[in-house]
Length: 302
Ligand code: SF4
Image (cartoon, rainbow, N blue to C red; front, side):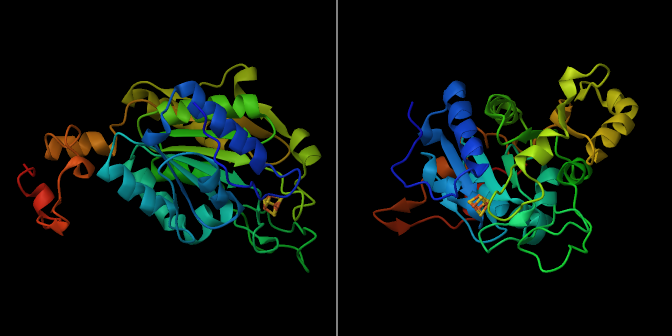
């Protein structure tokens, strides 16, 4: 299957976005997902352009609103594979509340966080993931805000799959995206990516000196197979998620296989939701709507 569109890819030379896009192509290809069953929803930022470069039923949403749009798409048709492509400013800043809400629901959506610590599209302002006191070349003074930790926030919010990848390591990133898409529940892949145009501090060299893969070291098990296991492993997992400095862990950091997804909860209160979701139900006749939106559910609530 060919997932490339005819759109001209408009990113700066050397941008980490290219590696992420390449990893998405390879992941959906190896998963055998038909573009008809794929929806990529983006927000505003360099990352949002991904929606034009991957074949699918895509949507380029408003700033910060990729997750609510993706939520609507997924609820209307839970059989679609829904991927959110958003930047750190988009998902951790203006869209931060939506990011948290997705974890609470554990809806089966994959969030790819393009994490370069700057607002690249608007000339390099400090984004929520830029550490305090870092002064990139686009800033007149050092950043005086502390940074958000996306993977720890996702853990607190209830995401059931949390991983971190690196944009230039496309082989490993592709595998993380595949596992995230296959996971049934809210999944986050925090993707560290150099922005060579505006972030002259967190460069490829800066990352390569710090990153390591958790599965190449003994003793860390991120998988929760039973509810009791969560109590035992949560402190070690939280400690790993907090690690960001001289050493930055990559790979699957947390994978809870016990919690039911939002679709499974919906099926419990609306038997038949999965077999006849709203997107497959007739709502018009000869161009005229004959169904009030509430009527779609009225005979399905138990
Ligand atoms: Fe990539 Fe930065 Fe250029 Fe945006 S501004 S395309 S993130 S290098």
